[in-house]
Length: 445
Ligand SMILES: C[S@@+](CC[C@H](N)C(=O)[O-])C[C@H]1O[C@@H](n2cnc3c(N)ncnc32)[C@H](O)[C@@H]1O
Image 1 (cartoon, rainbow, N blue to C red):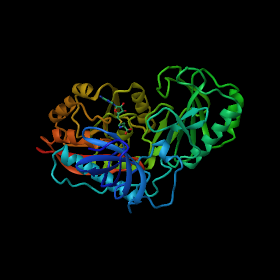
Image 2 (spheres, protein in one colour):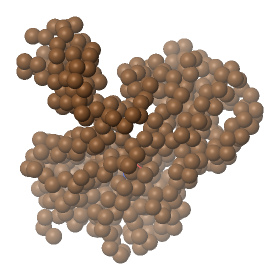
Image 3 (cartoon, helix red, strand yellow):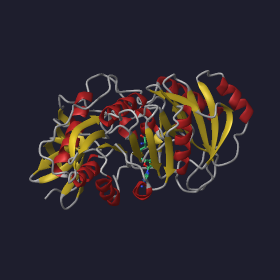
């Protein structure tokens, strides 16, 4: 039996989704913080449970050849915890994600040796995020430390576009220069709680100050100072006077500039408001949606249901002018955005309904040729899977951010549907997350 503080030599032969190395010692699984698959490490046991133990890496005896070797370093990686796979070579990250999807389909879905297309990765897996939520502390602006509410001040984040790093540096200076008070979760005092940034591919920035109040001190001067950065096209205040640690409040006040940020996916235009959901990796979202479009293979005049549609982006992206589109989404605000996005893209045959997909779909009277599913991590409600078997759409395209719930739902659907294609896409380089698009076709058509 292992003991706390015991030192031992281990070989890392696998990795978890959260980026820990996995080693075995006398039949016991040991999760090694910062261990990379292929490493031989000297570890110190930090925790012992009935079926597993945890260890910290004390000395890297023999580094794995799968360790990152592109020379790009992040000074915050050990504290910040936002990039759990940062130490792993990018190609190996892609292999791990490909395997994650295969393992889930085999173990949870019961599919034998499933055919999976090679994962679509990025050429340059950095600077890809179009959105950042910074926390503000007395020490500076940054992200929460792994497993705590302490802020790690960050001057430049490798997942952010260069312009976004530059803007946040200026914002940090402004907060200090104007002596803006910082919100304290414990006392509920202080003004600024966070700063949210959204950046489009043109390099234009929407800046949102999240405040426990109604305005910034010296607001006019601050706006003038920010206007000297031509990339900033929109400045908002988000009012959040709640005591909890929810990031944003419900009220957004436009201080200056455009009400929304424009982004294009393919030839479709989308207007993004401060609270809109929009996938955070624009380039890879285009790859993802292009895959959905290819799998959906809509013919002139066909009908499609886009379930869990968010702001309508998938349905709008894959539709032609005469496609009959129905989107369903639980969030009312997202449905408002979807209606607006459909109008911007001149769609005349689209409707968006708010409510639970498993409830609203029951009352639809259409005859869909294709159904898109893009549920949250927990997957589809069991009653929706049941309903889908009755609806008998010839094709289902399932977009998933969680291989485990995807595999569970595909297993249920496989009574009446056959898997045709499985395409993983990497939307989140340096993290353990993977997106998967699956095409299923009806067995009896
Ligand atoms: C992974 S997001 C997909 C968003 C969108 N398809 C996209 O690509 O941007 C999942 C969406 O499902 C919505 N949602 C969660 N539970 C739902 C339910 N039971 N019925 C309908 N929508 C739901 C969430 O609000 C969220 O917008």
